[in-house]
Image (tube, rainbow over all chains, first blue to last red; front, top):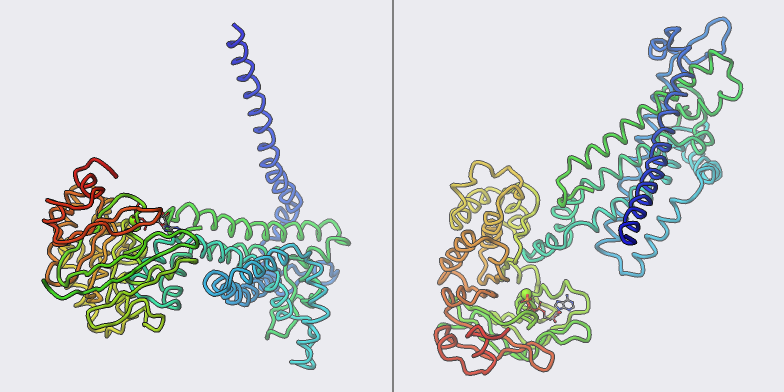
Amino acid sequence: MASSRNISLSRCVDRVTGGVLALFALVSGGTVLLLLWNLFAGAWPAIEAGRLGAFFTDAKWQPGSQRDPQFGMVTMLAGSALVTVLAVALALPVGLASAIFHRFYAPPLLARWNRRIMELLIGVPSVIFGFWGLMVVVPAILRIAPGTPGQSLLAGGVVLALMILPLIALTSQAALQAVPSSLLQAAAGLGLGRARTIVSVALPAARGGITTGVFLGLARALGETMAVVLVCGNIPQIPGSLFDPIRPITSTIALEMGYATASHKALLFCAGLVLMLCTALLVGWISFRKNAANPGIGGA
Amino acid sequence: MNAAALHISGLSVSYRDLTALREVDLAIPEGQITALIGPSGCGKSSFLHALNRLTDLVPGCRVSGSIRLADGTEVTDPQTDVLALRRRVGIVFQRPNPFPQSIRRNFEIPLKEHGWAKSDIPDRIETVLREVGLWKEISDRLHQNASTLSGGQQQRLCLARALALEPEVILFDEPCSALDPLASGVVEDLILSLREKVTVVIVTHHLAQARRIADHAAVFWTRDGAGTLVEQGPAERVFSSPQDPDAILYLNGARG
Ligand SMILES: Nc1ncnc2c1ncn2[C@@H]1O[C@H](COP(=O)(O)OP(=O)(O)OP(=O)(O)O)[C@@H](O)[C@H]1O
Ligand SMILES: [Mg+2]
C-alpha cells in the first residue's frame, strides 16, 4: 500500500515538474512571438499606407521633411550589409589564425591564455568598443587619410571586427578541437607535415563549425548598435570608399526613435522588422546547416 | 632466412612514469608477415607506433633503444626525417580512418605531400585501388565522400592509401577487429597478397588469423608491470611448440 502511494506521489511530482517546465518553455517561446507581434503592429500603419515599396524606391531617407518626405532605406541596408561583411572579412582570417595557433602551435600555457583573453573579449560591453573606436581607430584613420571625416565604414568595420573576433576564434577553436584524433593520426601515419595536415585535413573537417562561427559573427555584427552609432558617422548614404561615413539600420532606429512622430515611428518599426528578418534568416541558416551536417563528421 | 627489414634492439617505450614496453629485441624479416600477439595492454600498439614514430604524437611518451631499417636508417634518431620515414613505414589502424573528403582527395593529399607529379596521380590511384580490389566497385565514384563507403571498403581504401606511397613496411594494428567476418576475410586475403612485395607487421587478437597468415610470430606479455617479448620465431614453431609458460597457456586459449 505504502509503496503504491509513493509511486503515485512521485508520478504526481513528475507531472507537476513537467507542467512547470512546459509553462516556462511556453513563456520563452511566447516572448519571441509577442516581440514579433509588437514589431509587426508597430509597423502596420506604414505597411497599410503602402510605404513598404518606398523603402526600396525612394533615393533618400528624410521621413521628417515637410516638403519632400522620402523613405528610401537602401542606403541604410547597404550600410548595414557593407559594415557587417567588412567586419567578418577582417575578423575571419585573424580569428582562424588564432584558432589554428591555439590548436596546433601554442604551448599549453600560451594556448590557455589565448583562450582566456578571447573569453574576456566576448564579455566587453559594446559601448566600450565604441569608445575605443572613437579614441583609437578614428584618429588612426585620420592619420592614414587626412581630410576624411574619420568616422566611417572602415572605422565601423574595424570596431565590429574586434567585437566578433572572439566569437569566430572560439567557435573555430572548438571546431578544430572536435576534429577526430583518428584523422590526425591518419595524417601523421601518411607522413603529412603539420602545415599540410592543417590545410588539407583539419580545416576541411572543421569547416562546418567554422562556418557556424562566421554566421554567428554576421548576426552579431548586423545587430550591433552602440559601437556603430559612435564610429560610423551616421550619414545615410551609399559610401564611395572605405573612408565615407555610413549609417546602418540599427543606428537609424536608435538615433530617431526618441523623437519620431507617429508615421515616422511606424517606418522605424518596419526597419526593425527587416533587421529581425535578416537575423532570423542567418540564425535559421545556422540551425539548418547543423541539422544537415553529417553528425560526427566535421559539422559543429 | 631473408634479411631484416627492421632491426630492433633494446626497445623500450614509456608514458610518463608507466613503462609500456621494456627491452625488446626483434628482427622483422623482409617481405614476410610478422604477427604480434598477446593479451590487451601488453604494449603491442606501443611497439608498432614506435616503428614509425607515431609515438611522437603522444605527449610524455619516451622511446629508447634502436630501430634500424634495412638501409641502416636509425628510426629513433631525432635527426631522422620523420615524414620520409612514415612514407617508408606505413600504417593501417584498427578503425578505418579515411579523410571525410572525396575518395580521390584521400590519395591526392599524401601523394602530393610526398612529391608525386600531378599527372602520375590518377594512374597511381587506379593501380592501388586495383591492388585492393576496390577499382571495379568504386572507379565511377572517386568524387564521392569516402565516408559513404562501407566499413570494409573504407579499410581497404586505407590500405590502398598506405600502399600508394610505395612503403617498404606496412604496420597493421588489429586491422580486422572493427569489421564483420566477411569483410575481415577480404582484408586478411589482401594482407596475404602483400607477402614478398612489402614487409608486413600485424597486431592481431585473432589467433586463428595469425596462424593462417603469419610467417613469423612474436608473443608479448606483461611482466613486472611492463610489456615484454616472451617468445618469437617462425610462426609454425611458435604455434606448435612454444617455450614460454605464459605463451603456452595463451596460445592454447587458456589465458589472456
Ligand atoms: N597514450 C597513452 N598514454 C598513457 N598510457 C598509454 C598510452 N597508450 C598506451 N598506454 C599504456 O601503455 C600500455 C600498453 O598499451 P598498448 O596500447 O601498447 O597495449 P596493446 O597491447 O596494444 O593493447 P590492446 O591489445 O588492448 O590494444 C597500457 O598499459 C596502456 O595503458
Ligand atoms: Mg593496441
